[in-house]
Length: 252
Image 1 (cartoon, one colour):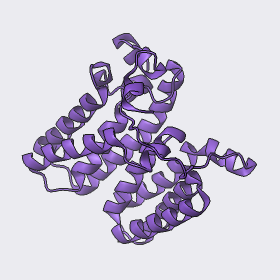
Image 2 (cartoon, helix red, strand yellow; image 1 turned 90 degrees about the vertical axis):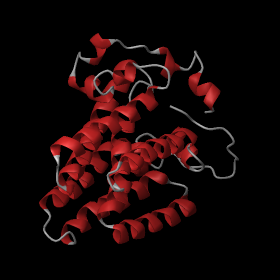
Image 3 (tube, rainbow, N blue to C red; image 1 turned 90 degrees about the horizontal axis):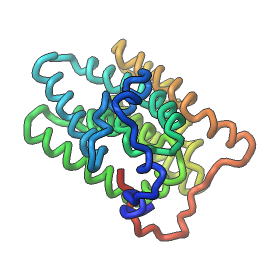
């Protein structure tokens, strides 16, 4: 889906216009639309990213959390975001509604966690995250079009690379080779992230927050990909087609 198609008036993801009553009708809606930020137009994804940066700055300036605290925040955001987004998309009757911005919020938190805390890095993190989130260079564009939960997987992988770069890179490399050979994304996403969640607790030197995050990650990946697991078992799972050139970009 290209930029024009994404923003087209007849795109189902753009025809839904929830209001504040919808946002606060249940916790899932409030989380998915980040307490109303997703209602802002134009480009709700940009507003969501900006809100995530502002919340992060407030935490850095006033909460003074340890590194494990920020990690726990990202883990909680990832867990709640997957749950809330799935329910909200169902209630709106569309896939990947543009007003759902919790993925941008948690995603930019991950980027911000990787760099020293300074105003310049905050601005750079915002710009870099939005650029890559908008452009979705191949093969990310194909993955995003054909598979649900892609941003959750990307955020989980990014957090794993921060926690244990060597283990994360090994699993990423194995997954890349597996996907290139089989064209099946979901099985290697599931196996690599579950493997990280089970192996990392033995390597993190007793950090309770990291152990909890790793276990939660493994459980979350299995739960979020339960429909993919059913399709894998039945032999009907989607595959990527690398033979077609993709020239259009997907934008939220």
